Length: 299
Image 1: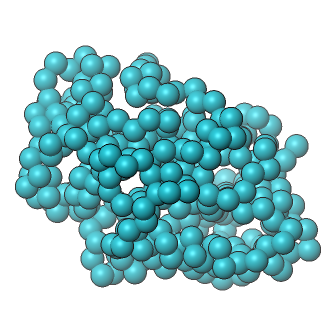
Image 2: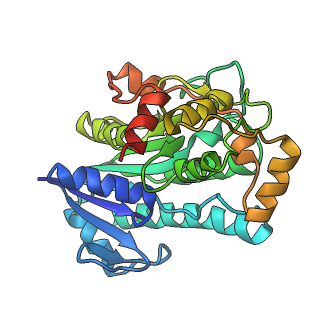
């Protein structure tokens, strides 16, 4: 039986992983600021404390810690987004280096937003164009902090994760709400690419990386990006909603400001390919967005 510790694991993705690996018989510990259950361990993501002892009995460490980017990019929020990722990564690295029996594998979250927006060029781990704006620079700093830590006894993996769609969190919930009320049309011109992955394949991909003892950078995305127009059309089809009002760019920008988020989350074209997962033989359960929606929306 293996033991997995998930830092920042109380959110949507952490619960997806906990549920998946628990069903496979793993022992799971969650590092969280607000412990509520027996397997929750208190940490503040800033200081070494009693929580470090759990790493001595941990086979795999997964770090998901970081303030959500689903917010307005004020200077205060930018600092929180940056510091929550960099500080927690460095702290975990320090804890690992102090371990007598460190985890065998450390998987650290990153984001496929590290790549420049693209409509034609497919962004892979080996030839993706890494750009220069706030979101991309956060991802670069995050990965640089992770790469700077030397862990000779621990394999290291960077997870460049895309939009994860799931039943209890992620992008599907607001998209369902829009579609239900007749607002599920394309966003902007609808040509922007969407890289996505079903929550089950997200967990399976991480299980695959762990089981194969892989290391390096992995794009955690489905095999083929789709367009925003196809995304919304397919969701309307599965939900049996015949009509969806589209959203011009100006309305998206205004709406994002009203609900306290940023329009880049839907305007950027994410054309990301899982080259390394495919090269290592990973098989997806949900390759098509219609199959993914059908599974997640069934009662």
